[in-house]
Every structure is written in C-alpha cells, then in structure tokens.
Amino acid sequence: MRVYLVTPYGWCSGVKKSISLAEKILQTKGEVYTLGALVHNPKVIEDLERRGIKIWNNESIPEGKKLIVRAHGLPYKEVEKYKEYGNEIYDATCPLVKRVQKLAEFLRKNGYKVLIVGEKKHPEVISIMSYAEEKGVLIENINDAIMVEPFPKIGIVIQTTQSWEEVEEIIKLILTKGKEIRIFNTICPEVEKRQKKAKILSEMVELVLVLGGKNSANTRRLYNILVKNVPTYHIENLEEIDMEWFNNKQKIGIITGTSTPESFVEEVLRLLETHHPLELHLV
Ligand code: SF4
Image 1 (cartoon, rainbow, N blue to C red):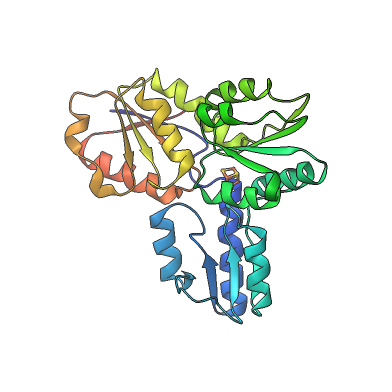
Image 2: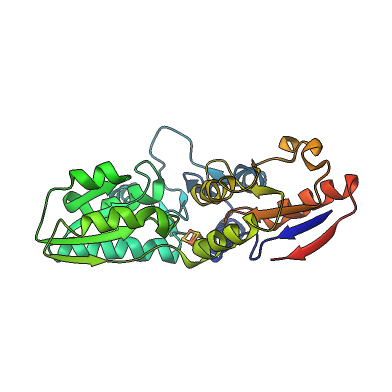
C-alpha cells in the first residue's frame, strides 16, 4: 500500500514555540499552569499534564502562580487581571496571532470599525476581539456580513486558520459597506500551505486520514476540504482507525493539523504497517 504523507507534518512553528516555552518554565520554575489548553490537541495536553504542565481548571482566580497564555492568545483584560493577582505571566501566544491582535488594536485606534472574520467561539477570535474593543464586529458567515451597518472606515482581519476561499465571498460583500476599507490577510501561511496540499492530495489517493484534535480548527478545515473529493477520516486516537477501511486500497493519504505531534504520525504508520506492507511517499 502506498502512503502519501503531506509535508510539513507535525507541529507548526507557533505550536513548537508554545510548547518549548512551557517546558522551559517548568524546568526553571518547577510549577506552571496554562490558561486554557495550550494547543488544541488532547494527546498533547495529556502528555504535557503528565510532565507537570497543567491547565488551570480551578474556578477561582489563581494567585501567585506561573501562568502561560496559550498559543491562541487570551483577551488582554483577562491577562491584566491575572497580573493583578500577583501571577507571573508567560506569553506563548503565537507571533502570527499576536500580529492579528495588534492589527485589531491599530485599526480601533485609527477609527476603523474592526471586522474579525472567523469562528465566534474560537479562543483566538475572542482574544482578537478584545483588542478591537467596542469597535469589533465578529463575522462568521455571509449573513453576519449582510448585517454589517455601513461605516466610513472599515478594517478587516481574519482568523489565522480560515481558508481564503471560504472568506472571499464575505470580504467581497463587506467591500460594499464602506468608503475606506483595509483588508489584512492574516491567514497563517503554514495553514494555507497544508490546505493547498490537501487539495492536491485529494486527487491523488483513494482514502485520507486527517490526524489531529477534533477541537482543532485548522484540522477540521483540512477534513472539510478533503471530504468533498475523497473518503476521509478525522482521527484523534489510534483506536478510531478501522483497518477494514484499507481493504483493496492502494493509495492512502495522511495529513496533519498544525497541533498534531509527529509521534502520532509515526504511531499511525506503525499500525498500518502491521497489516499492509507500506511504501511511503512525501507530498
Ligand atoms: S497555525 Fe499558524 S497561527 Fe496557528 S499557532 Fe501555528 S503558526 Fe501560529
């Protein structure tokens, strides 16, 4: 069986940075908590917890702790509040998310209505919204865009894990809503690259495994791209894989979300190899 593995696979640069910061603080300070899941992958979170990097799950506000802001960022007022309670804050927000936060702040300060195109409940979008303050408007779909009141100056930023194809229509509609419109394409290049490869992969193989957290926005998007063209399974754990899927299949694709560890790809390959001789190709 030929396996076509999409590169890059495993963690993106932002996830790598967040995890290595958390590990460094654990080593030097002995105890560290993350504010929310550091990344959207349950396997990674379990592994971090085993090593002592825990999520602050307590209902109460932590005091005097070492706290890490997750890769998706946090609303800035929340961070300020934690500081007031004597906590040491370590910022593991991905630099690309930070950039979107700063753009939202810049637009707000310069008199723009700030439109944030993304999933309303996603932590990244909530964090960006905090920088736009009262000027921020969340746009999740075309209906939200239709509802936007015309405004002389409009600025648009996009959740890093969106795909341009899905936001294009929304943006075209918003172009009719203002006199001066600034659009910042803040989609992450690492995400875009994987989305492009997903399309290529969907034409090459008979079945695809998308590896990553079910709560990971970019992994879900890869699944959505692929499933339109080819039988596709979104896999979070090895136990979800049914070996019957591969009967009579010669060409299998594997692609990972940006918070999926390389070790999970290796586990999946080992599992497949126990049933079928594999020929691995990188895409
Ligand atoms: S996917 Fe992109 S924006 Fe998100 S953490 Fe990774 S590098 Fe940062």
